[in-house]
Image (cartoon, rainbow, N blue to C red; front, top):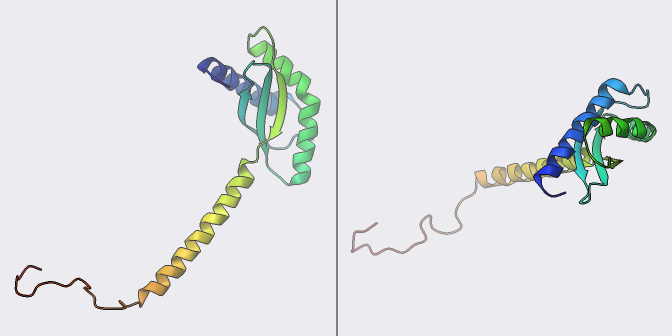
Length: 143
Protein backbone atom coordinates (compact mmCIF):
# COMPACT_ATOMS: atom_id res chain seq x y z
CA UNK A 1 0.00 0.00 0.00
CA UNK A 2 1.63 3.23 -1.09
CA UNK A 3 0.57 6.83 -1.07
CA UNK A 4 -1.54 9.00 1.15
CA UNK A 5 -4.67 8.27 -0.86
CA UNK A 6 -4.43 4.58 -0.06
CA UNK A 7 -3.83 5.36 3.61
CA UNK A 8 -6.93 7.55 3.75
CA UNK A 9 -9.08 4.93 2.05
CA UNK A 10 -7.72 2.22 4.37
CA UNK A 11 -8.56 4.36 7.41
CA UNK A 12 -12.10 4.96 6.09
CA UNK A 13 -12.57 1.23 5.53
CA UNK A 14 -11.29 0.54 9.05
CA UNK A 15 -13.82 2.95 10.57
CA UNK A 16 -16.71 1.57 8.52
CA UNK A 17 -15.87 -2.06 9.37
CA UNK A 18 -15.48 -1.26 13.07
CA UNK A 19 -18.79 0.60 13.13
CA UNK A 20 -20.55 -2.25 11.34
CA UNK A 21 -19.19 -4.82 13.78
CA UNK A 22 -20.06 -2.81 16.86
CA UNK A 23 -23.53 -1.55 15.92
CA UNK A 24 -25.12 -3.15 12.91
CA UNK A 25 -24.20 -6.81 12.72
CA UNK A 26 -26.00 -8.86 15.36
CA UNK A 27 -24.25 -12.21 15.10
CA UNK A 28 -23.79 -14.08 18.39
CA UNK A 29 -20.61 -15.68 17.01
CA UNK A 30 -18.90 -12.31 16.95
CA UNK A 31 -17.26 -11.77 20.28
CA UNK A 32 -15.37 -8.71 21.38
CA UNK A 33 -13.72 -7.83 18.05
CA UNK A 34 -11.31 -4.96 17.51
CA UNK A 35 -10.23 -3.90 14.04
CA UNK A 36 -6.53 -3.11 14.34
CA UNK A 37 -5.49 -2.27 10.79
CA UNK A 38 -6.55 -2.28 7.15
CA UNK A 39 -4.07 -2.71 4.31
CA UNK A 40 -4.97 -2.13 0.67
CA UNK A 41 -3.24 -3.99 -2.12
CA UNK A 42 -1.30 -1.92 -4.64
CA UNK A 43 -4.15 -2.07 -7.13
CA UNK A 44 -6.78 -1.36 -4.40
CA UNK A 45 -8.65 -4.56 -5.34
CA UNK A 46 -8.16 -6.26 -1.96
CA UNK A 47 -8.40 -4.91 1.57
CA UNK A 48 -6.84 -7.01 4.31
CA UNK A 49 -8.70 -6.29 7.55
CA UNK A 50 -6.68 -7.27 10.62
CA UNK A 51 -8.62 -7.89 13.83
CA UNK A 52 -8.15 -9.17 17.36
CA UNK A 53 -10.60 -11.13 19.49
CA UNK A 54 -10.85 -11.29 23.24
CA UNK A 55 -11.05 -14.93 24.22
CA UNK A 56 -9.64 -18.36 23.57
CA UNK A 57 -9.12 -20.23 20.31
CA UNK A 58 -12.77 -21.30 20.16
CA UNK A 59 -13.90 -17.67 20.38
CA UNK A 60 -11.43 -16.79 17.63
CA UNK A 61 -12.76 -19.56 15.38
CA UNK A 62 -16.38 -18.53 15.96
CA UNK A 63 -15.53 -14.90 15.25
CA UNK A 64 -13.80 -15.90 12.01
CA UNK A 65 -16.97 -17.76 10.95
CA UNK A 66 -19.14 -14.78 11.87
CA UNK A 67 -16.94 -12.38 9.92
CA UNK A 68 -16.99 -14.66 6.90
CA UNK A 69 -20.79 -14.79 7.06
CA UNK A 70 -21.11 -11.01 7.38
CA UNK A 71 -18.51 -10.21 4.71
CA UNK A 72 -21.13 -9.26 2.11
CA UNK A 73 -22.96 -6.85 4.41
CA UNK A 74 -19.71 -5.24 5.46
CA UNK A 75 -18.52 -4.89 1.86
CA UNK A 76 -21.84 -3.26 0.93
CA UNK A 77 -21.38 -0.73 3.75
CA UNK A 78 -17.82 -0.07 2.57
CA UNK A 79 -19.11 0.52 -0.97
CA UNK A 80 -21.61 3.08 0.33
CA UNK A 81 -19.12 4.80 2.61
CA UNK A 82 -16.10 4.94 0.34
CA UNK A 83 -16.86 6.31 -3.10
CA UNK A 84 -14.70 4.21 -5.40
CA UNK A 85 -15.20 2.76 -8.84
CA UNK A 86 -14.55 -0.72 -7.49
CA UNK A 87 -15.10 -1.82 -3.92
CA UNK A 88 -12.17 -3.91 -2.66
CA UNK A 89 -12.67 -7.52 -1.67
CA UNK A 90 -12.39 -7.84 2.11
CA UNK A 91 -10.11 -10.45 3.65
CA UNK A 92 -10.32 -10.81 7.43
CA UNK A 93 -7.04 -11.83 9.05
CA UNK A 94 -6.55 -12.56 12.74
CA UNK A 95 -3.88 -10.18 14.01
CA UNK A 96 -1.05 -12.03 15.74
CA UNK A 97 0.20 -8.91 17.52
CA UNK A 98 -1.16 -9.79 20.99
CA UNK A 99 0.56 -13.19 20.97
CA UNK A 100 3.79 -11.64 19.74
CA UNK A 101 3.63 -8.95 22.41
CA UNK A 102 3.05 -11.61 25.10
CA UNK A 103 6.18 -13.43 23.92
CA UNK A 104 8.08 -10.14 23.90
CA UNK A 105 6.90 -9.37 27.46
CA UNK A 106 8.06 -12.83 28.59
CA UNK A 107 11.48 -12.23 27.03
CA UNK A 108 11.76 -8.84 28.73
CA UNK A 109 10.82 -10.40 32.08
CA UNK A 110 13.52 -13.08 31.72
CA UNK A 111 16.13 -10.45 30.80
CA UNK A 112 15.09 -8.33 33.79
CA UNK A 113 15.44 -11.36 36.10
CA UNK A 114 18.90 -12.10 34.66
CA UNK A 115 19.94 -8.47 35.19
CA UNK A 116 18.74 -8.62 38.80
CA UNK A 117 20.74 -11.81 39.37
CA UNK A 118 23.89 -10.24 37.93
CA UNK A 119 23.40 -7.11 40.06
CA UNK A 120 22.98 -9.29 43.15
CA UNK A 121 26.21 -11.16 42.40
CA UNK A 122 28.06 -7.89 41.81
CA UNK A 123 27.05 -6.40 45.18
CA UNK A 124 29.80 -7.99 47.28
CA UNK A 125 32.35 -8.27 44.50
CA UNK A 126 35.85 -6.87 44.86
CA UNK A 127 38.46 -5.97 42.32
CA UNK A 128 40.73 -8.83 41.26
CA UNK A 129 43.81 -6.63 41.45
CA UNK A 130 44.43 -3.14 42.72
CA UNK A 131 41.55 -0.71 42.86
CA UNK A 132 43.47 1.62 40.58
CA UNK A 133 45.37 -0.55 38.09
CA UNK A 134 46.99 2.39 36.29
CA UNK A 135 50.58 3.14 37.22
CA UNK A 136 51.30 6.74 37.96
CA UNK A 137 54.49 8.62 38.58
CA UNK A 138 54.62 9.52 42.23
CA UNK A 139 57.30 12.12 41.48
CA UNK A 140 55.11 14.19 39.09
CA UNK A 141 52.43 14.70 41.65
CA UNK A 142 49.75 14.44 38.95
CA UNK A 143 46.93 12.24 40.02
